[in-house]
Image (cartoon, rainbow, N blue to C red):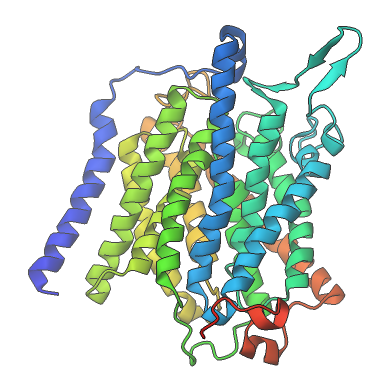
Length: 471
């Protein structure tokens, strides 16, 4: 690349970042605080038609989040592995859609959202008790349990889709070498003992919930799962990659993605599905939903540019894989901040995430760990970056969650401390629990396939199927 072209790219990145940082500061007048609606106030004020509209939106978001796991993540990950393992990755995604749904319905939702214990949920919602519609004999009428302005059944379904995709993200780290039986057992244990407690800590009024009485350092802002989904899965993915060891031939054999067409299409599907993931986390359809939708899109777009321009400057050419990964990095980074930041900071967050995650993914060769599909580099690093930057850019103008008190660092608030504390807690908890759970799984089923299975591929050896039959 000619020197002047590189220079123009660098100038473009600097201008984009400058506009993103300065825009909201120049545009926002002092004292202009938008008071965000609460679900309780909405439920009291809206009529039946409006409630139906909220529910329709949330059911649509539920479908969008499920769409993220398959076909979205299944295609994104499936294209990144070698062709002899493409079905194994897709099977993991599909199987987890079934397995985690059953666990969530039996006890997972109750552990995550039941009761007011600061550490773990209770048995209020076991086996869908108090979740599904029931008949009230005294009133002689059916009763629909509500969660804000939507039926609790809808809330359960929406949150259950997060429970599905989170362990599926971890699969990217141990792709092409973990036993299917080990993956199943690990996902059951991890979902029960890592995801459910974290979910309760953040969204169930626990020790990381913003403003909760028992919260550590005041709790953390996490609109749609920066800590619950991305940091937890990304850090656990790193532990899995280290404890399972490298794939045989890593660093010597050709392990390039076998089908980047799948990966590009999968990334686009994830981008679309992420609108349900983030905007749906308002649990209603209102102005804050629009804000979360907008910043989600803006951050993804800036992530594409950030990663691509970084490659352009350092390698001379931008890649399709880099653009796809940059989109996901931007989406991951904005997830905790989606309800708390404005569009211009979202551009900055996406651009920063694109560059930082690209650098992080490039370091695995130097450190010698085989994170096969960069689950840690994108989700662990991107989620951590997003949680911290939420503490920088969060503003009352989006959601007055602290009743008039300032939030982010640029606004003069102090939530950054809580963001850092919650991030550290999530890192430590995820590392310790994942190590313990992997040791348990290793003792019961073993973790890794044998040498012949890895050489011939998991598709044929674990599932007796092939992704491509060439006649």
